[in-house]
Length: 305
Image 1 (tube, one colour):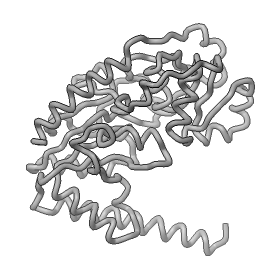
Image 2 (cartoon, one colour; image 1 turned 90 degrees about the horizontal axis):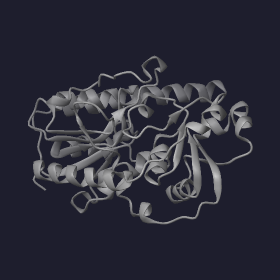
Image 3 (cartoon, rainbow, N blue to C red; image 1 turned 60 degrees about the vertical axis):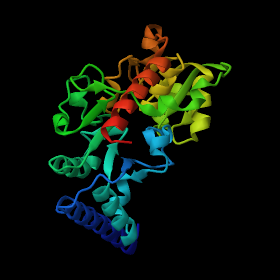
Image 4 (tube, rainbow, N blue to C red; image 1 turned 30 degrees about the horizontal axis):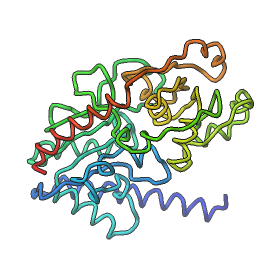
């Protein structure tokens, strides 16, 4: 990298950091917080199908067209940041879904929401979960970096907590009603970074694979046409379980440990020894949809939609 490109990259980093701080300070210092309508705030990233489809605005008519990207707050375009500020100040908020809790990249958002929770702002968390990269916390009880009791309604995708369990709302997508023929015994769904790791991939060279940044339709079809799914992607795990598949995960975050229906957790080195432990679960799709529909009714009543 040339010195000029290095300087430009550093300058862009500092500019984004300044933008983030400035727009959030404007929001929390604004005494005029309203609930005129509602907006679904999540990671609205079409290049990450898990993040993109884990939000309720895709599935409920009451929320159609009412979405905002969490990362617009650091956009270099002043008008985008101004819209982010105005939209949040003017409307009630639905946060989620996704692994937004205990994740440094979303700490500023959570701190902002903690302050807004002390106002009349109506805030709903829908299908969020913890997502710490610290391996010391894998499988441990995680204390959230928000205070759930501060909010009007909280549904988390992590099971077995005092908060209401609400699994990822992507289960509502009609694609899960589609029947697919199984064409392979084992399918691999890895993050792009994992697929670039030659040492790791050499262990799975006998199997077909797909990257988690593929299109939603391609990724779901690949999962549904596999009997066994091995993955390091949360949503690949989740969607495979919805399709009644046997699932093994290679964890890269705490998020894999608290789903109600546990996959087999393994390592790249020892996965073959764990293949005989795999199981599938019946009725998960129907249960997850029932839970989300019930939560939607509560959320829409609370938000007066």
